[in-house]
Length: 247
Image: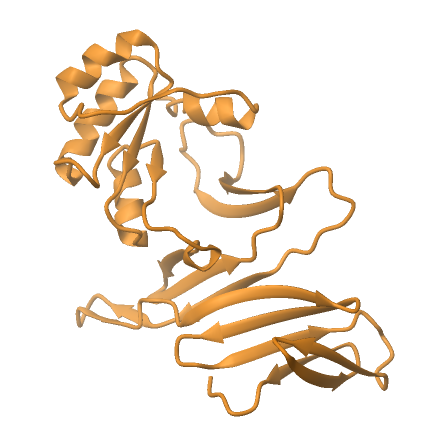
């Protein structure tokens, strides 16, 4: 029974160790095979600034496998379809270009004909883990259940803020795809006088605030300053659509 390839670079990083990577113009399986003998933990396969395409990645990654070296591909676009297709053809790691802000770091997938985008507010010192749940099955003969884990170690307290956005549709029968891109422009978390404030802004100009008081008194009134504007609500929490804007 074939066992799942070990990702040497990933294992080293998980243990907090230094992992080495060879970068350069090695775009043929023969060259990757030759370089494998020098013991680098990973080899960067250049798909953004080089000639590598989807048709080359499987052979290049197999050449890495001969030496137990992790195959890491720099893709040319920060698009979910490009990323998961690169993993499908054998890459063990991805370098994603053009990620300049936290708002550009999100995941989108399709399930049951609908698109789903998951984004979160990064916390200081946090780790984001992409994994799979289920039994201990190195050969992956059981059903695969992907998951995302956010983890912070050594902190006295932390607040996790995330947003799962269903949007659009894809119909294979009619070959139609509608609204495959997320409609959220930004997700922010602020604290003000002990309140938790989650601010969601859309690409259409909408701005919505989830104000949380952490006070169970249903009649108590609260107020907080959000981007220079004072908002008020009663009770534990309330969704507030800021005036003059559309969602």
